[in-house]
Image 1 (cartoon, rainbow, N blue to C red):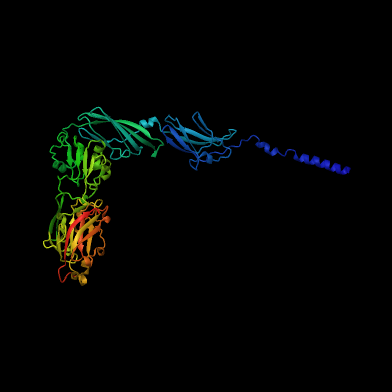
Image 2: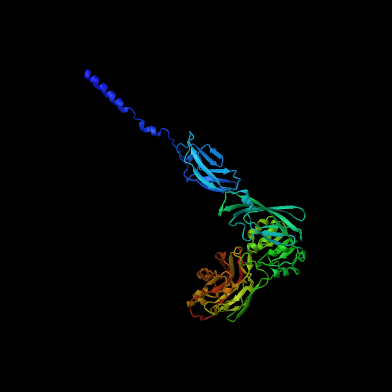
Length: 552
């Protein structure tokens, strides 16, 4: 028993001795600090007297989604400034940086014991007032008449130095009234009722975003500039864009004084520019329908022994200007409407491409949309012998027909005797015009076909019609500035039923395929151009009448 007690006593001493100094290996770390986690990136963006600094590769995410271990707060230091943010953030906005200099920023986190993370550093130069003072905007182009002015920037206001956003302007007219306006993407503005022969000052306030190294800064900057415009006198000559049109309106002296008595101008539908209105100080009314003052232009054809002219006479409702009036050439009309200077504008819908510009003024009555007839008959001064294109299109015509079968309401009756296998006749507009498909969606006419025996054997195809539509006939490509936009329905869709032979029958052609094309020529082919030697036993005689464009 005594021996057992002595054994355990010795064992206890040995074990206690072995435990002595077991924590000695941690002593060397007892003075170390455990750093909180740091942000994973630092990217700067400059603004006006401020910067924004992104701190997370994940982007600008809510604080609730940021996990940085024991980190609790965010600290930003620069110069002698310290900003402490009570929480974790994915980005910071630092304002009040008014000095034009390089700022060095340190950003780090701290934990609850204010232990710091490893700081992230970035150097940035914010945009300052001195930068704004040296910022230049493009010089405008100024167009003047004795009583009005247009200010615009043909090449835009944006540049390598700045992005333009919008502007406002203010000036005092000759009656002492302050006039103001605002412009967005289209910076151009119009000034009216100015004192002729005297300088006029307009204050322009630009809102722009400056660029640094071709990168836009964060903020929109306001720049205010005074523009002094020296106004011409009423005796100063102007160079008209549409001299012939103005002369037709009675203008003989091309000065503001010389046109001061004119209160109304009439333009033909094919006018290319309306900018001359700018020089008429007392203009109140504009007629864009020709107003009976202008005839349709003409176009001559001379080929294969055919000499003919199409066009002339009054404007026809189914004809619209071949291309829209360019917006730059309609700006004065827009300006004068916005300024309330015009009391009446007459316009045929979809005739010149000005509908979007004019529609806002219809309800007030300033713009009068001319009522277009439901059906518009094609006058025979637009008719053309197809031989001018191809001898295979030969037809003997009688216009007007003298022996046509009786019918109701027949107009412009045409007798055709087919003389070759591709027999065709043509309706064509002058090159300044195309068909107004937005208003007139159908071509309609009446046809009187011969007896069934006429179409025996190989001549069966001639019991059908083949309307074809194009910008110009192939031998007259010079008559279109828009290339060829040919289309045609299937001739079999216009086969004349046996029950409709030897009587007047109505035919309708859907023109929807012509929408947005510059079609100005209709070729009416009889037979669909079958391949044969054209030697019928008896004449194939058709009568046509009432070719017209229809709304429905």
